[in-house]
Length: 236
Image (cartoon, rainbow, N blue to C red):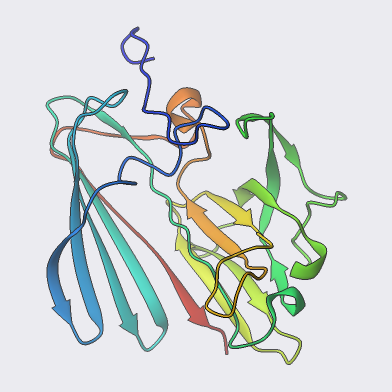
């Protein structure tokens, strides 16, 4: 609903009847700047079915001494306030270590319970359940496609990690805007060597279905810009 009027985004996942993967799923990005260790791209969200707003967005990928830093900006070019959420879908590895052998640690205290269409219908604590990843679980033991909340932020950042048996570790960090995370462990990820298990740790500023529930949504005023960042680094 928007100002009392029903809204319907285009259904992009027919089997569940969902509008999935965001407003820029089929939009081409424009190259704005490119350097040896940095690229800046831009894309416009135009008014469309279920979302009558105009947003100008950019995403910068930069390689730094601390790893990869991804910075998003969203500017509301509409004449009225616009509801906005940001999410990303990074898949992580630790060198050539088989993904099954990696240990995933997720600093999140709740998970979203979903219906048969993967729409959240509740939120429950993970402590003491099979969904608790706070102490680390081997990827080979998991079959997960779940959203998590209660993400702990320390000194302005949250940190999730993958660790190899030899102690090497990759971390996904996000600033305080990203209060949620999705974990996905597909078993038939298409890789050059053939289908294999993979793991995505996806930082999100709002959980699935936020345009209906309102949870985590940020309403940008006309002309307002939102800047937020996340990244991937190899831990010491």
